[in-house]
Amino acid sequence: MEDSGKRKDYITWDEYFMGVAEMSARRSKDPNTQVGACIVSSDNKILSMGYNGFPKGCSDDDFPWTKMHAKDDPYNAKYFYATHAELNAILNYRGGSLEGTKLYVTLFPCNECAKALIQAGITTLIYYSDKYADDAATKASKRMLDAAGVRYYQYKPTGRNISLEL
View 1 (cartoon, one colour):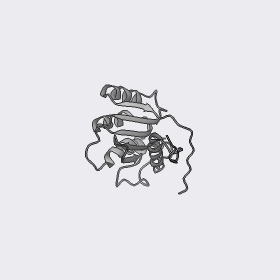
View 2 (view 1 turned 90 degrees about the horizontal axis):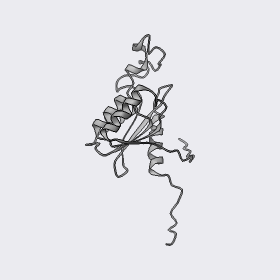
View 3 (view 1 turned 120 degrees about the horizontal axis):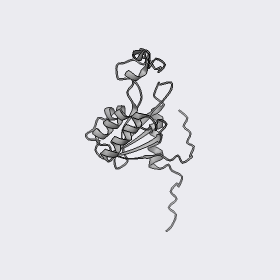
View 4 (view 1 turned 45 degrees about the vertical axis):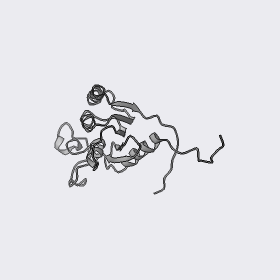
């Protein structure tokens, strides 16, 4: 077969969608953990994106971003207020059903986000980091995903360096 001249160093779908999730994470104002998510249709169309942040109407200048007081004064810690990237991506979707879609996310989902993605009909989860693998919430998440038949796998970095000047 003759060479068509097509460029051969284009990025893969996984690189593309995980890159979109990573760019979404850059919108987060969380000083400790920035998470991004991208929901993709079975024919590789981006349906929605999200990042961890506060709900609409809740100013990120008026609510705490710290986690220092999570135990002694939880009202003044981020955990009661922040919406995770996966849930934001699901809630941001304005189309019909998410049945049969894929979710790319930069951090393995907690148990609450696992419930939401299962209920939404997302059938494949591709995650970048599993840094909380030993936490109870992550273990519960994996148990539910397994029971619901949601396929999940860790993204394998290719080492490709892509630079954007914005």
